[in-house]
Image (cartoon, rainbow, N blue to C red; front, side):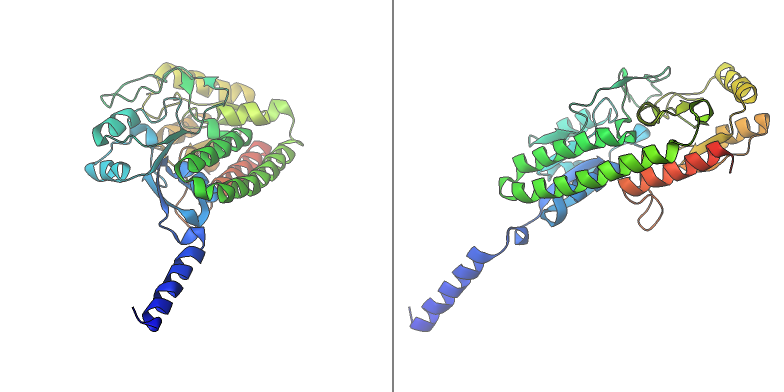
Length: 306
């Protein structure tokens, strides 16, 4: 080997040795739905390539995996899901792909709230959401737990990147703590008796528990559950009796039921909330933090009667 060849080989070896860790092939992570995809990206940074099965604006309750989704899971190095029965389709999907890699269930360590009536309805899709309300992400303190679990899972799948994941998680946790404090401050001036909101389905119990807001809905915690005529009539009477002003549709729900309630009560719907899915990029709920700020701003305005 000539001197020039040896020097070229040595230079190439030095370049390979000194390349930063993030120049390696990104870790392939599959997240079950858009909100978790954002959280994984926040913690993973440029070391991860995130694929989301249920995209922005889509409903994870009624999601039906396709062969393309199965291929994505089969190629993943880490799978991240919510748990608490939210992704009733996930066990079958994992089994069909033969995935044996690491998994993160983000609600590990979260204290669940019991599901409301209508939670376990099955309309041919076999989406049994279990006995717990799965929408734990509606409480910011719960999402701080999600972030810890995601960081742990990323460290398991990519030990070399663990210092970066821990640093990103610490930074993002500080942002979430600020968000939590801002939400509490937004509600602080409003009397507890006035904090009543009607939504399409029961997706906000964790928000209500964390921030002292009472949510009522014609549907259970799954969008698959059907609102009964008796339940809707009872809700209409309650709105009239208690003078509830805040009436919202959701970005994943059929608005017709809420519009019907609005007509029967004379309460004009206050707009749209984000429950189980983020908005498209560039819109007002493209990340988890923006979703929570947008929802809170709209809720507070509606409850005040603005």
